[in-house]
Structure formats: C-alpha cells, structure tokens
Image 1: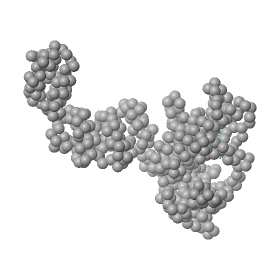
Image 2 (image 1 turned 180 degrees about the vertical axis):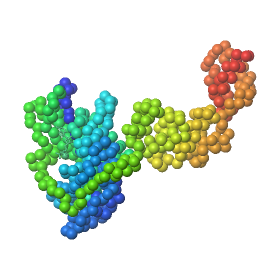
Image 3 (image 1 turned 90 degrees about the horizontal axis):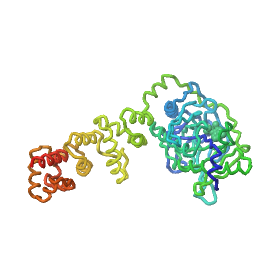
Image 4 (image 1 turned 90 degrees about the vertical axis):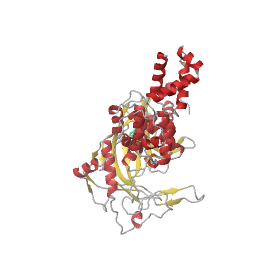
Length: 487
Ligand code: ADP
Ligand code: MG
C-alpha cells in the first residue's frame, strides 16, 4: 500500500491498547493447579479448571495483590468493593463455557503511564481500568494437519487486563507505551513480560480522523502481535489502510482483525455486528472482594523502586544524562546493581561507565545476565575508589585488575597489591627513572627540549615500560616538564 506524505499528514491516528499480562503466581487464578509455561499438554488441569459440576473456584489472593501493585504504580484508584462476573461464550479452548472476569467493578480505575512522544517529550497516557480475569486454554493448529489440538494448561491462569484511554497518537507512541508497561510489570515482578511466550499480549484499537477534528473515526481492533515491534507494524498497516479507504470514499466498519507477521498485514476476523453477546452476570461461586486502606498501604510500602522514580533520581540528584539514566533503568536488575554500587562510591558517572562498559561487555560476551555476575557491587565500587585515589590507572584497572577480579573473586585493592600494581607516585623514584630514560635517548631529549611535544608520548612510553606501568602518568609528565626547565 502506497500513500503520499501529503495525504498521510492530513490525518491524525488515534490508538488505544488493551494489554493482557499473565500473573507470575505459583498457581492458577481460582484453583491450585500449577501456573507454569511449557509443561506437557493438559497436565496442569484439575476438575476445577474444567468447571466440572460440584467444583468451586477459590480466589488466589496473590493475583489481587499483584493487580493492586500495578494500580498503585499507575496511580489508579483501587476499588474497595469488587465482585466477579461470568463472561459466557462457547469456544473449544474455554472448558467451562465462561470466563470469570470483572465487568462493572474492575480492581483499578484511572491512573496513567508516562511515555516519550515522537519528539522525545514526556507524555501521560491515561489508564481506563485494570481488571482481573482468567486466561483460556490454547488451540493448536500447526501440529496435526487434520485436527485442531487443545492444551488446557493455560486455562485459568490469572491475568490482568490493562485498558488505555485512546491517548496514543502514533505507532511509535504505542511502541513506547508497551515497552513501559512491560518494564513496569517486570519491575513489580508480577509478570515476566515475555511476548513470544504470550505472557504479555496486546490488542491494538486503531482509528484515524482528520487533523483538527474532535470526532474519533471508526476503530478496528487488531490481535495476535507477538512482539512490540509487531504491535507497531500492525498499527502502521492499519493507519495506512484506513486513510486509503477514507480517501477512496469507502466506509470503514468496526471489526476485529488478525495480524499476520509474515505478510506484515492484517485481515478481518469478525465484524462487530457478529460480536458475541457475552451475557455477563455476577459469578455466584466467588465471594466479593474487599480491599481495605490498610491493605493498600501495606502493599505500597512493599513496592520496589520503579523505573520512573529511579530515572528522576539519576537525572536530578545524581546529575547523570538522560541517556545514562535510560540505560540504567531499562532493566530492573541493572538498576538495582547500580543502586548497590553507589552505596559505596559517589563517583556516579564512573559507576555507569563500568556497569554499561566493561561489565556489560563481559556479560554479553558470555551470554550472562547481571544476576549471574559474580563480582559484588561493593567490589566494583572498591575498584572505582582505587582509581579515584590515584592508586591504579583506568587502563590498568580495565586491562589487568578487572579481569583478575573475574577469576579470583578478591577485591581490587588485594589484587593490585598482590601483583605489585599500585601506582608509584613516589616522585624520587620516578625522577630517577626519567633521568635514566633521558640519558639513554639523548637525541630525542634534545628535540623535546626544543619544544617538540610529539616526543612527550615517546618518553611517557619508555617511562611506563621501565616502571612496569606503575608510574602515575600525571606526576610523570609533571616531572618531565620540571626536569626540562631545570636542565
Ligand atoms: P471492547 O470490549 O470493545 O474491546 P474496551 O473498553 O475493552 O472495549 O476497549 C476499548 C479500547 O479501544 C480502549 O483501549 C480505548 O482506548 C480504545 N478506543 C476507543 N475508541 C477508540 C478510537 N476511536 N480509536 C482508537 N482506539 C479507541
Ligand atoms: Mg477489546
């Protein structure tokens, strides 16, 4: 599909996202079946999950805690009195014939998520609501050529659905929003955020309107994007499709569409007219939930540091660049490691550089995560402090001390001392070395005296060689200049 820049610019895309996040609980939402990805098909399925007559669901309290944490993180209102509802529909992977969800009393309402807009400015995306529900099983179409196979392990896995306001204005903003939501659930440790495995899923609602208009266009909902990149691609595809249709004078209908990642295109699944009537009614088998103020306060006090707050701290208090703060807060484990380093050193910039430089390279080269890293943050701080006190140079730290620390699990100080690497800032010793080097290279010495600064590097090299790298470069160059002046 081709569309000129000029025509595209007449339109304003409008996007709202519904994100389903599988909760990282041990057991399912309403039964003690294990909540586990990748188990042999249909092994995590009890009569409760199947909704057999005589069975009763029982609420997993962890799910409630997790949903409340997400609500607190978004600044949402937590609903004090909630009840569950049955959403009825027939589908092969829905063994009970209904899904237990929250309809009129979602656990969280309102709130927002902070993202960057296309210009890199802060933008607040409103949260309409967050509610708890259960996942369905999985229909598998690509194993048996003649039949659809059903795996019910996923049936009953607890989900929260996070519904955004139609506040997003481009596919890039949508990309940034999903990235932020994923970061947040990972910081909160309530969902692993893995889109390939389907622990985080996103439906995108898309419409376009003429710029300056205040009347939203007809929206479609696109499903089945298994990466954030594909969410963006699907939205781009829809924006173009809508504009072309409108320009041709065609009418758009509210419908649900499917995204095909191979084709990079969407196709119609069902129109809104054919949409299910879910016949919601109150779930009679589950008690209503009451959330007290004390409960919310307790959960709030247990919240880990969140990426936004850390970002603000790093830029405002520690005076780090936006770029560095972004690198640090991108992954919770990295941020937490950094937090530990800076308990023992106030050289914040060096801490970022070590963490995102030598440490990250080592981890990448060995396919490790920061949580696998054996050197403690305190020892990294010790290494930084050793450099800052002038006892070892940056180069020596990076090339010799750090690699030794990886092998020996000793402090930088110990390693530097054992190997006799502590820099020599004893001026008399360095002076003797310099004088020796001058005598051995009289021609070069004359040229340096005449002001040929290129020879400074030549002599520094010789001095480092003679001192086995231990001469402090700063005092060495100071002494060279003094000796020349006095010669
Ligand atoms: P439904 O059950 O029909 O999916 P929901 O309330 O669950 O309705 O979700 C509606 C989603 O569609 C929200 O994320 C909302 O922001 C978004 N939305 C509503 N109107 C528009 C529109 N005109 N264009 C794009 N997105 C929209
Ligand atoms: Mg929807």
